[in-house]
Image (cartoon, rainbow, N blue to C red; front, side):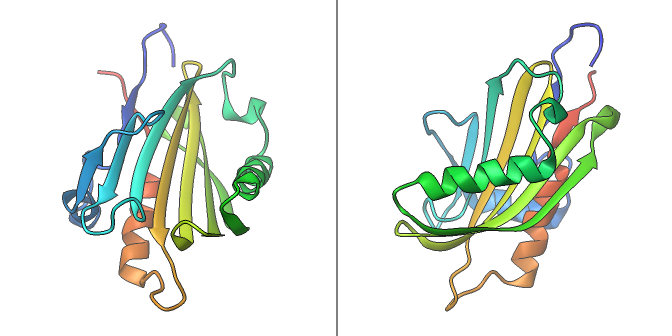
Length: 168
């Protein structure tokens, strides 16, 4: 980003297809310490949610912190340190270019915990104007009620839409 202007974040529900908007319509925005924005699915409470956190960092790019695999490893280590985590495993790691060739890392992993059981987590991150933008999507993925393909498609669309918005 040039000119010292603050980038705008394109939140995952802006200018988005009807399928992804469906997830937003059945979610309630809630307040949570540390979260810039948090939406919880209306009838599922905190089990199914989409959250965004924005924190100042000293980095200019995400690559300065590490590779996508390094970031995924750090995520899994953090999950495993939680007292409630029984198991955590990376499913997929990707890197894509966002608006203005911005590096965006995406990580999909699953967590089994004593709080909420088995969950599928989709995360995305990018750095812009020395701020770290993190998207975290958490959805129940229990063996008796696995994540269905339609919901997964919606969650992946939300994940892939996370980016900075062009400055007006």
